[in-house]
Length: 474
Image 1 (cartoon, rainbow, N blue to C red):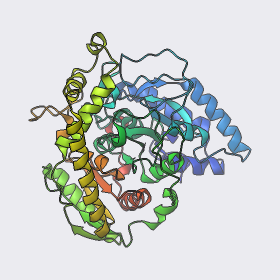
Image 2 (cartoon, rainbow, N blue to C red; image 1 turned 180 degrees about the vertical axis):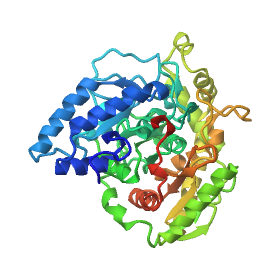
Image 3 (cartoon, one colour; image 1 turned 90 degrees about the vertical axis):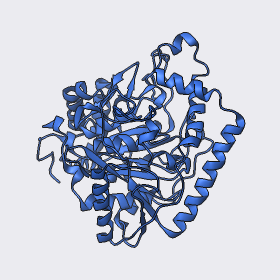
Image 4 (tube, helix red, strand yellow; image 1 turned 45 degrees about the vertical axis):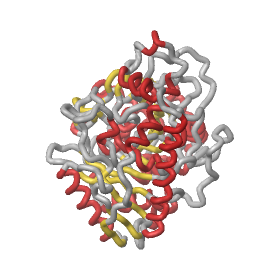
């Protein structure tokens, strides 16, 4: 490892794992790493709008404390001194949580950290600020009435995806190597695929969440990074119980970081190019198929196999729109006029959901979970494209000329695994002829987060897609 990036002479291009190695040897400084991350924010955030709040003074003060601890040989945790950002859906002490909405307040006091924020703070992370989100994190792109449009490091005229688009653009541009996002229908994996970064949606309940999301047991908190090794590092820190989450699971039996060395050797892997119902851009299909071939060289047994379910978009919409209605329930008509009109539209549609409608959707969800459990009796992992399309114009919910107005119609590979509560990682697998990133999705059975991350890490180590720099960085 060199002390700083060979390309730029800045620590902003290093991973958290590399930073921590440099802190241990004294080659690198948490203060310098934080300054470099803040410089990267100052230089490029105007182009992508990844942050809605930056607290440089607090970050530098935390970095100085971290540096003193490293000099004394007494780091307080596995993230000590690593610049980190937080999606503005998660509670943060001292900072407002606006959720992309003008209906929220910037007035304090802000006295509570959400569980994953508390865990990264306890681990010594340097918190830089908060990342942009669509209003109430409701859609697969990132724009809101409060913070405007968040765009893509590979082309700032295009969307970063969402709803954790601010986090993806931030880590993709070296504005801190770690970020915490949320995912109830693809919201960490969608922007990871669009921005050439990594994201992991955990097994439901693996990472504690408080206050509970209106999207219920679809919703997860997940790590967003540039490397899978960093995602595993952050996952291990935040995958801890918290009494505020009544559904949280116990500590994982296996460290994700420790499991990385096992790679994909001996795994039984299924590859589904379409899940049996999706239409995929030919360039994406070819890149994903080439990525799948790599797993054979890594010692895995790979077979073409569809899980065998129909597109669950309608039951997902029933659950999603009803959750949107619940989110807007306390918001009166005058305030709704200031909200994202499409969010208001689906909430009004969801308000008409009956208990029988909801239970019917849950029945489909249960059947899907049973089917996937049986599928994983035969296969350890499932590989799919993360998305069937590349990034499109920023500020739109769907590409121009798209047949349906809802974001779910171009995310057929993500929301099914929120319904089944399975872990899934998106890892970069190449670039189209237009220079836009493409993501490969690695899905595992419930509780197999460490296996999913290990396989994705093995693939990333065998390829160099993550080393390519966005044009915005020159």
